[in-house]
Amino acid sequence: MKIKNFLGISALLLLAACSGEQPILDFGEENMSVTLTAAVGGEMETRAETAAPSGYRMRYILEIRELGTTTVTTRIVQTSPSFSFLLDKGVYDFLMWADYIESNAEDIEEDLFYDTSNLNAIIRTAEVPEANTEALDAFAAVVTKNKTSAPLEIGTVDLMRPFARINLVEKDAARLAAITKIEVDYTTEANQKFNVQTDASVTVVKGVEPVTRTILKPSNASIPTTFFFDYLFAPLTSAKTANAMTVRVYTGEADDYDLVGTVTVPAGMSYQRNKKTNLTAYYAVSETTVDMEMTAWDEAETTIDVDAIWDGTYPASIAIAELTLETAKQSVGNYEIATPEQLAAMAYLINNATTYDTYKAHTYKLMQDIDLHEHEWKPIGSTNERMFAGTFDGNGHRISGLKVSSGTFVGLFGYMNGSGSVIQYLMVEGNVSSGGSVIQYVGGIAGYCSLGTIRFCSFEGTLSANNATGNVFVGGIASAVPTATNCLSLATSIATNNCTGNVYRGGITGLGTIVNYSGYVNGTAPTVGGSSLGVGTDDFTFTSKAALLTSLDPTTASANNCNTNATDFRWIAKDGKLALEKITNEN
Image (cartoon, rainbow, N blue to C red; front, side, top):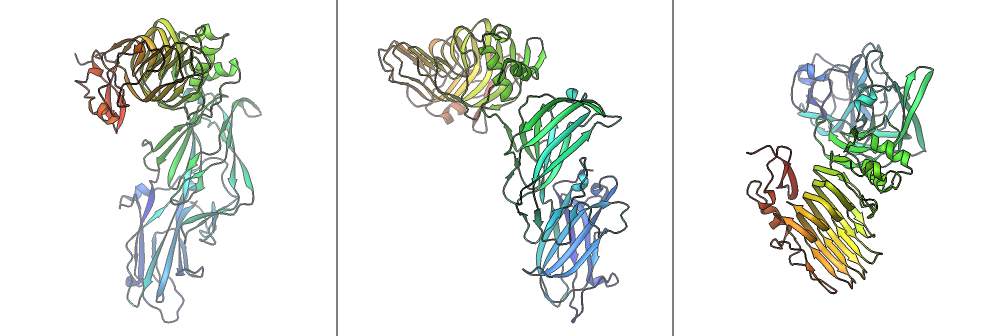
């Protein structure tokens, strides 16, 4: 049974004065008793809800100290959640700790996973298991009360976990089924302690402690997709960052394991008190990108933060790029892109003269939102000799953090040219600039599309052409495109700086045919410098992002015309942002 986000303790403390006597246990004094009943989620529920991991039982420690001091007046350790004792008058801190011990432990005061001899400095002991166990879970709380000469009644006290849980999760269960051993190397901060009285984790840094965890395939089952987890003390209100981790995966059997690959989880992943941080990747291959998901402890399906980490590094070779893209392959010529690294590998292989013909006309489908973190992007199809000629289905997702600073054909895609080639159902956010060439083509989705269709795409951000002496084409979706259908532009700036040749510029495209709808939100149509031949035939009606979003009625907005197929999407406004919503056949 998984315990939820905190263990509730209903505490009824009935405390009376004792003239000069030391506190004692006295279960016969009904009006002096303290009753603690474990519950889940702060509410009274059945006892079955608080079942301990197999082979373990929970013990409870109560320490009472005079306010602000470290002197222990009373300490009780027991496996029952009900306490009774006597106490002198005074103001006290009541420190509570609950953790697991083995079911057959004879001495319940003997610590197992945590040294609890001082609740102001609880520390993980050396006697920790090699494999994962939820028996590392524990709970703590402190309350301050004034004991007068009358009995004292304390209401519900909620014990909360003092740590975060780090999970390593494999994305591909089929690949994991072939793995027989996994090793996880990581370091923990030495002498990390938890102070129950101040409700704070304290780290005494004396270096780091290297730890290796080994996970072996069970005899009758596969290694679970969440193949590793551990508990780390964490601050109450802020997040901490973890050290780097190394994961090695093997096939084979004992004494004859074969190393499949090594994956490094980069340092800097966040973890936070009473939350789970899921570090998800294709660990069963040698090249992967790690996604971070932080969730509430008892809400595993609720995403609080998802961040696909990409450091701007492209594959170092064709072999690495092909291995990376292979993790996205569904069938011959069909790929499902789920990480920035897979997208970068796709760009690398299309832009490479050796592999261009193999990958240029495939079908690529985006499976989740991707953040490029404003690292310099190399457009897909970088020149008129290596062009994108396939299908890219954004699948209603968003690529953010796009940054392109120079080049001739610039955008998420550079040059698009292919009979039947399509870019669709995609939202892009970022900043795109060209420079360093006589003629320049600038677009949010594609720098230039000489043959193909762009449909149901949007761009939000800035675009600029710089220092061109020849023709300049700039558009929110593409600089030039045969047909742009149902596309939206939320470009806040479409600029041509020090361009002395002819300028073609528009909210959707500088040159081409626009079907249905476009919106340019900078407030006015762009002015054109140089010897102008005109701007794109865009609709500049909407002067703000809010006005554009308000116009997007999913059934009547012109932006959604001609969109009735079951696999298509339509434009909507959601949570103050532009969004694509999948629809069913409305005919």
